[in-house]
Length: 395
Image (cartoon, rainbow, N blue to C red):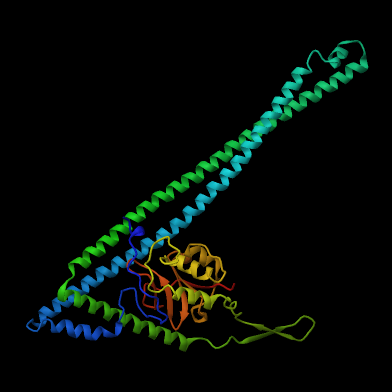
């Protein structure tokens, strides 16, 4: 069974309190020092070198687990992009097929037009009174017959030309259908490769975890907690520095006014207001904490991937969003880090292509991420790599 179809972890009751966690899996960062002391106490007879060796081994294991978790995040980001592109390609197939169906119906009509003109020409051939008149010495009748024949020839030519043009259009439409289907097939193949890569990353993580037992497990947990505490401290310091460096309200410039006088011109226009559904979306996302797990392509109500959670949460307040972080990035209005308000979206990757989370204030985000996780609240900084952009949904 693939990582996308794994059994859901044991359900837990949702909690309203905001949990501050990190990607490195620490759920109690303040116990880091105690874990380290307890781990050292497990080896009272060991020398300082032995303790140092064990701690170095624990750090190495923690590095491996971090790298594997990051790898899973990378693969999930690629998978989300490919899934969205595949859905777009599938839509193109449907649209191209609809056009082809219309053209084929038109082609049948053009064939019928040619058939009718041919039958009429045959039925009104040499036995027609007009032709008899044309063959007589009556000049007036002869001119009428000539005009009739020219008209019938023109009708036939027009019908044949229309048939040929429609046949060419049908061939072009069929080529578009084939090209679109080829793109769908290519995306499907890419998805299979990504699923294989994701399965390997999960298997490698499980293999590493299986080897970590006893005192080494305690040391690894202590190292992860220490790193989480360090990341949180760095995050808090960065937030404090940013708050201290936040610019004062933009000064106003006075410019010339047509016809004399002056007009006040703001130098930094403010971003659009936060949408009415922001608080409701946050509440909806928080209600999912502890219920399910991260599943690529899932959009609730229990399991989610990153953009699926954002789509579902905002959907509960009547805001429709696509199931792809890059598309959500494109739909949102850019804001700066110091302008972030609860309900704004935080993005990772070029054009928001790798991950998305909902900012809830206090340097915290709520999101779905990574194998073994569900919907969680983490620090904005120190969770993964630095964000690449921020967006506001002012709906």
